[in-house]
Image (cartoon, rainbow, N blue to C red; front, top):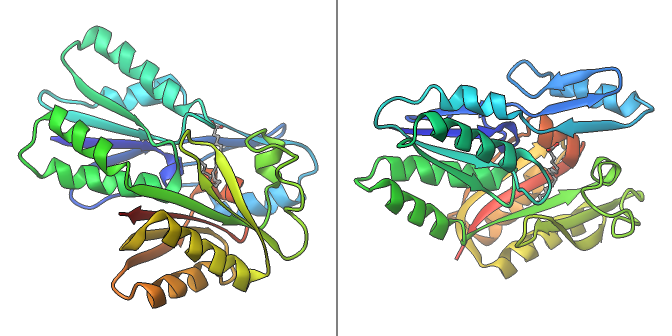
Amino acid sequence: MIRLVADSSCDLFEMKDVYFSTVPMNIGTDERNYVDDENLDIHELLDYLAHYKGKSFTACPSTDSWLQEYNKMEEGDELFVVTITSGLSGTYNSAWLGKQMYLEKHPDAKIHVIDSLSTGPEMRLILEKLAELGKKEMTFEEKIEAITEYMKTTRLFFTLSSLHNLVQNGRVSRLSALAAGALNISIVGTASKVGTLELIHKSRGEKRAVADTVKEMEIAGYKGGKCYICQVECRSIHEKVAAAVREKWPTATIEHYPARGLCSFYAERNGIILGCECE
Ligand code: X90
């Protein structure tokens, strides 16, 4: 049986017709800790952070929390683990370390840990492809090869109104973030080849931000495949991007849905993260 496990930055709780589970990230301040699981109230978290004066931060899942998932494996299972980019988080490392520990006791276990070099909706694309591969007559190695090839075709873009938490946590330099946070400016960017943030546009006004986002998708070679938009309490930008994609590529598979805790923390209110299949 194929088993899929990801950290909570994939923004999913469940998947159809496949074993799937997520391991929570943590979000906190000096006075509170939030676990990014199904009990997390995102709205309350965002309100709390908006009023909290001190520093807030996140932490990756412990090796132990990965091991708890690995320990559920049974004879003949193939486990694929998908993590947020190692360029911004220790998550891949802790998942990988868990694998080494598990293999000490179960040397023949089939576990493949994937560094998405991305997050959110691009992780979802990878997970859905893995679920598809799980239904095929393929060896474990062939599946690894196929998912590695697929990942060359997926991309991640983001359109954010604030980079405050990213800067505060050293995930993007203060200098490159200058002007972000200014009234009515959105930052359009992408996940770089090494899994870090690459800022592309400072777009003035929502209309411009939508156009710049769609333009970047086109440059990336998007032709109407899957387009997943994960959003953080957005007023309308997620719907406007979806409509613009629909208009340009009428047969596109488009979905938008709320982010879980980790992506909500970093993308912040009115932020979107978009994953798409390119050619
Ligand atoms: O280990 C941890 O504490 C988690 C750290 C995560 C850091 C950044 C998450 C960014 C999420 C922002 C837009 C998408 C950027 C993707 C770049 C690869 C959302």
